[in-house]
Image 1 (spheres, rainbow, N blue to C red):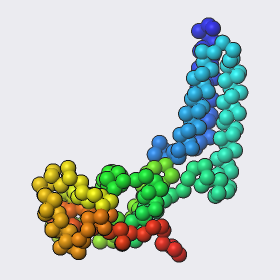
Image 2 (image 1 turned 90 degrees about the vertical axis):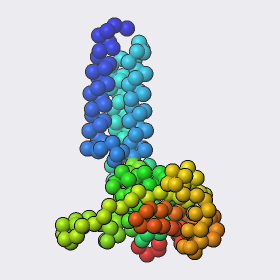
Image 3 (image 1 turned 90 degrees about the horizontal axis):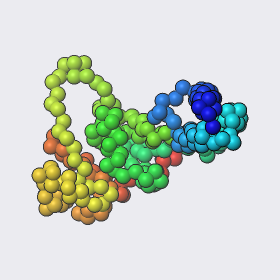
Image 4 (image 1 turned 30 degrees about the vertical axis):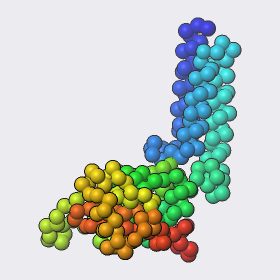
Length: 235
């Protein structure tokens, strides 16, 4: 194989990648669904394997990329036209929190732990689940949320007040288990936690789905009894 052959294949491959990328539309990386990611990887693999194979010519590269691109284009069109195909191939949004209540089935189906959920919320400037009214997990893995009205973006200047800063919140109980490391970091003991939970009306730690605490706001607790197993009907 000559350097010219390799160069021609690279040029053909680049053009093919650009064409297929245009077929995907103008999407940010965060908007790519798992399906988008997989077929992009497969296309890259096709081009990679063909570059150093003497039996594969530049025209073969174009042919393989063209067939793959046509298939993807057809799938994109079908996904736009038929919701069932779109949901099957690209997934749909999952409601994780609705009207302040956790959707346990959806959390389990998406294999999400509470601390993972808190991490995603912090990336959106939300440091406590007490602020969240509705939370959606989008097909690409990003989240969309709606805060309670009293927690939404109202500036202190609008109200002519000088608010105090909230303290950090700590996740002390996650799905019925105590986060001992976080508890120790916050300078609290198990005895203190048990006593505080009893004061809040929770005698059994296994009843508690989620319990966070901050110095300024105290406890915010959700029990398994208060959580739902799926989206509320009629919404």
